[in-house]
Length: 203
Length: 203
DNA sequence: CTCACTATATACCGCTCGGTATGAAAATCG
DNA sequence: CGATTTTCATACCGAGCGGTATATAGTGAG
Image (cartoon, rainbow over all chains, first blue to last red; front, side, top):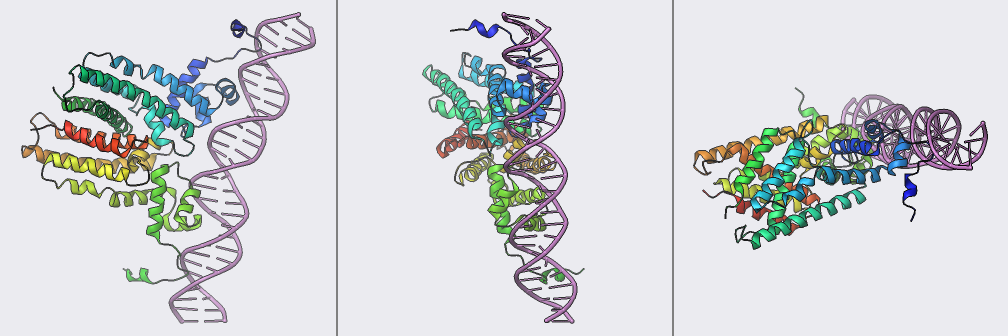
């Protein structure tokens, strides 16, 4: 029950901000993928040495999970807020535009970190793949539930299955990430959003 | 001008079939990606030793390009034949079903080799990424031209841009690959094809 | 058979990887 | 002031990477 004891500083204080360092690590993982990001590149971007990294974050794998937390918290918050849109069509558009925003926010377009991790990690993908899949299953569940509500409200055509529509929407978002990784321009990605919305069923 | 001289066998003959070995290498690259496939795993799957690999195929990078050739020749032939369908809608459906077939053909669903290579290769992606992008640009060009013909024939609604529609279709196919990599079932992928076709504009 | 030539098998190379042992530096507590 | 505790900097570790040198084995030509 000694919670306040953690605030007492004893010994030499660390010279870096863990949140800033984690944010820098996230950028490296996002551009290189989990296996493609080397400890040398990570520590250089974070501005710390390897022992500091291991003392503060555990190891490379634990660092990645924490970076994934940060990514979900900072970059994927639009997913939750999109569910609050009044119509299914508005939900879809917010999802697509949110995806577009995070993919074109940096210097050059890149896919979602989850997509990169999922497709790229092959050798020791065990823990990473499981983590990413669990997070995505959670997002998928939320979208399906939102679309089921939409269907109950008569917001979707009768023939459309909410689960199938959710899978379709995620596929488009992930495909947009692949296009972004392949060097597609911002204009092309915006056009992709508009084309998808033009395809959306009108009830 | 001594072409026939190549048929003369001199020295010890090789004990393996290069095409079979290349096919085995393709499987490894397809599951592991370019950087994730190690020489040890490649040589074991190919049933040859490293010096034989280097003598026959050059190096790992050259082997990958040859494997990509084989992949395009064997697995992506449906792309060319899909263009011969009479209507744009039929072209799209053939493309989607062809993608579904190659992704669910093996033991477990996996994304297109091009997608894997594009998203995964980050460190020395130079030659590999360029190669994959060039091949994809060629496919994209063919599809755009086919859809332009469809538009000229009145086979598409007036508001639909062929280039945008092609980008959209590729995005869905690539998204399907990501879903496959993420452990989606064959039924889910089939449902994705049907949902996409249900979205297709009716003229 | 000998020679020229090519493929095989083994051992090895330099390098980078993720991770760590060690010792010095910097802070608080008594 | 020591004593203690924690962080930082450097050098290092074993393992695996892509790639190769070397020597041996198997073939056709003369």
